[in-house]
Image (cartoon, rainbow, N blue to C red):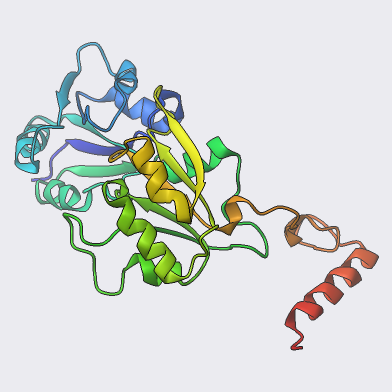
Length: 274
């Protein structure tokens, strides 16, 4: 028999309650049970909950402690809003919960949220994919923590690409992070950003370099709730996207002939071998 219950996995964003999506706010407002982690999610998001909703803090509960709530939702046809920090797709321990909910015949839906790496980019006013500088963003964390990393996913290996990298869950071992980034090929003076509690009232965002990353973290006594951004795009200027070049055309815009010829010459020069 299929249950009438539903569990929504809601991305709360990096911290500030007004960075919830409209859908996230609506789902929270309609839920019979709201599960949130006080250690990771700002309490202001609960302002969207119904006055009669059951509010459960999961910060001290293993998944076995949350499972009875899902079972009750299945039995009684309740709606649960399970609030996760950032975006549930990234280090959210969501997949195991999805499997449990589906085993209970619960309907499941996921509401994406603003990730902390995009929030930090907004705070410092930078694009992470600057034309001709970096066109990829690597999201990872330092190996050797509580959760094993798959083979081949090492920070120094990712660093060899030299593009923009966002490192989560790694502040407690900042010295190792710095060593791995340097060993992978980032120059000592590569721009870096250390961001603690981005968008929270006690937010701290500090610019540094790969070579001073460890000292910066230790100076401010950071060890959790901290994200690192690294890469040349954090300081690059003067490049231009071809998308908005007058010589570029697409379905809604024609190219200007002279600008089109100029753009073609520039592209040809990029592919020539000296």
